Amino acid sequence: MTGGGQPPEPGIPALPDIHPASPARLPGAGVIAVTVLAPFAAGYFLSYLFRTANVVIAPNLAHDLGLSAAELGLLTSIYFIVFAAFQIPLGILLDRFGPRRVQASLLVFAAAGAGLFAVGEGFLAVAAGRGLIGLGVSGCLMAAIKANVQWWPREKLPLVNGIVGACGSIGALSATVPVELALHLVGWRTVFVVLAAATAALAAATLIVVPERDAGARSTGGGVRGQLRDMAQIYGNGYFWRICIMVFVHSSAFLGYQTLWMGPWLRDVAGMGAAEAAETLLWFNGGMAVGVISIGAVSERLQRVGVRPLAVICVAFVGSIATQAMLAFGHTALALPLCIAFGYFGSASLLVYAVLGQTFPARLAGRVNTAQNMMIFAGAFAAQWGIGAIINLWPPVAEGRYLPEAHQAAFLTMIALELAAMAWFLIAPYRPPAVDKDVPAAR
Image 1 (cartoon, helix red, strand yellow):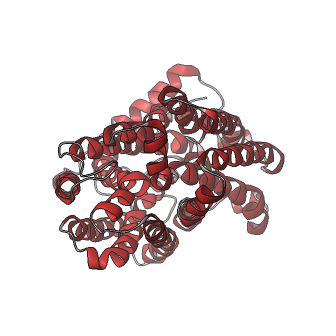
Image 2 (cartoon, rainbow, N blue to C red; image 1 turned 120 degrees about the horizontal axis):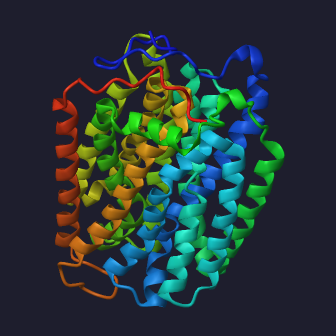
């Protein structure tokens, strides 16, 4: 039996229960919620706000900087490629230094990037700012999940990770109608000045408020060789890849649309104006907010009767793909409920971190989660740019507007990739190499 009280997956050896969140040594849940969960959840709020702001300001960026669809996709996706590239060193840093110090340090880069984005006058300047933002918020979710693994009992991980995800959804909500209103009042440059100041304030608050976990809850020695040995355990585990491919392909499609291309689809295919599209995106992200809380809570309860979080993920992904198919075939009369459903079902990807946290030793929590996260955000980079490249195969009908056929081709391409990834998950063998329990924690 694993530490969470569940038998291991077929082909996965039982791992020692070294989860550090021993209730006897921890303060009460209320204290942990205020001093740990809240600051890290606030970081994920800002991360998602930065991530999705471009879906609303995209027409302004394209107009002010003279960008094509592919260039706009590239500018927005720079966030994702920098984010993804930092995931492996991020996991090592989290496991070595802990989430508090890593989060506070990285947020300084995000604040600087937001400031540069706000004042940049050309593509290269705003792209550099976007890249710094991606670097600076690259640890927000992983630091929160690492902190949750350290401070909360294992069986609570789906719920508390869901709470963090809900705060991210609120950040995404804030990037819709509120940002649209702010654009009319002060413009996108002032919006990013405000975000830069808020990010710097959160970096300081994280250092002041969050307690430091004792050294036993994180890796503190063993050098680079030990760190690389642990990474080899993760990347050599077939079960990791069986889950990873399905989740990263679906998440790539979801993020590609949530953070950029859903807005143009609502405008070009559904015929919405800017205000109506922003309101629909608000509902989209509202569906995600409800999803991360309710799906996490349902998963926690279903575990008690033997239903694993992975089964919940699969059911939600089927719902997401069906929703995307209806969008692809132009059911514009149902655009609002379909956007809500897309946000709801797409949020199930967050459960993968609970699956990995319950499968691998806690000392590897930072690295195994960032290994998955690297794949997701590298895929999101490819999806944002690739969707734009597909749309660019058709001539634009007006400045910044594209044919419905172009959007349909992009949607159908992503659906085909998601179906292939789910097929891989269903047929992949249950024979991953064993995770070496006897290798000491990388220190």
